[in-house]
Length: 82
Image (cartoon, rainbow, N blue to C red; front, side, top):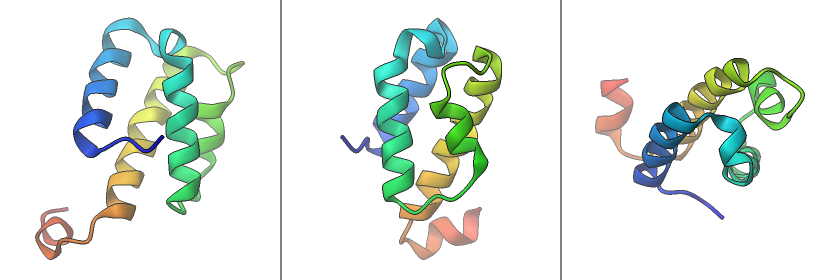
């Protein structure tokens, strides 16, 4: 499953509220989406690793989502704004 930017935002709020451990399936989908988008960073592996403490994975989630959005951005306005 590929999440839209709006869905990634909603998931971020849900993880902020509930913690990443309550959203493991969604986190795994984000990992797959990041890899499919060509995001190459150790943070993808951190997010995927359920043995890593939740706060570390949650921080990685934010960075990975940011990378997904940037990797999929095709709008020149987006590139200039960031």
